[in-house]
Length: 113
Image (tube, rainbow, N blue to C red; front, side):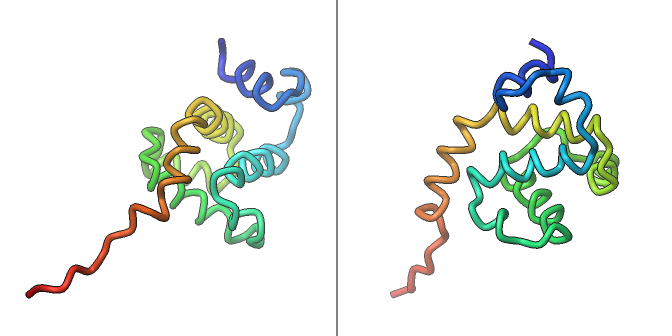
């Protein structure tokens, strides 16, 4: 299954409609997809969302991120948005589990005795 068809099937839209979306609309789809794992993202202004999403991808060890991709992501290039949407949707089970466990995995300060 190609990236575009997987994204379209997971978002329940036609691949033709997905291909016709602007970069801004794709960014909103990515925000909506990540909001299922990070509820606070949906409440942030659009300008802060990109930085928060980059942190999300770094935290969840997205293998797509490098300096070129992050620059392209910040510019809103469609190929990068498609790849990040594909990665997010194809790893949704793992991301869901990590998001659930995240509050319980905080480091604790253990006093020395």
